[in-house]
Length: 119
Image 1 (cartoon, helix red, strand yellow):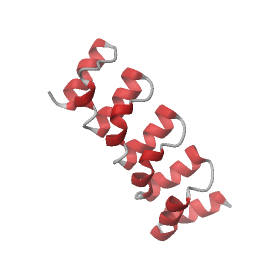
Image 2 (tube, helix red, strand yellow):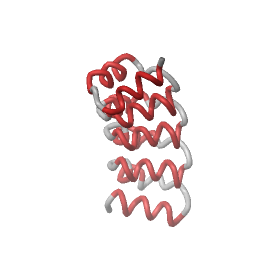
Image 3 (cartoon, helix red, strand yellow):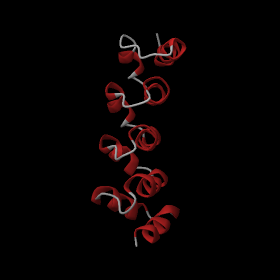
Image 4 (cartoon, helix red, strand yellow):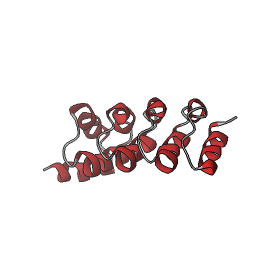
């Protein structure tokens, strides 16, 4: 069974399925969707997988836990757009030092907006 199939099985049943969670947790997208649509809260088992993906780490922080997702900050820091969004919507200010430094080094279109935002 794939993570997608396991997710849809749990979604169809409309409840948490602990036996399927190890399968779901192998994929960031399905882990995030399982947290959002089935559990409607944290999916601890899926967090290590989610944390490797900037997009799903950002979404997990904003949509699921509604606070910093420290485990996913390394992945987020590798994407200037999601770093910028994370600073506005989650941190609500200056990024933690390693993320801030990565954003400044990236020197892309979001760096200027980020610098203006934190001033």
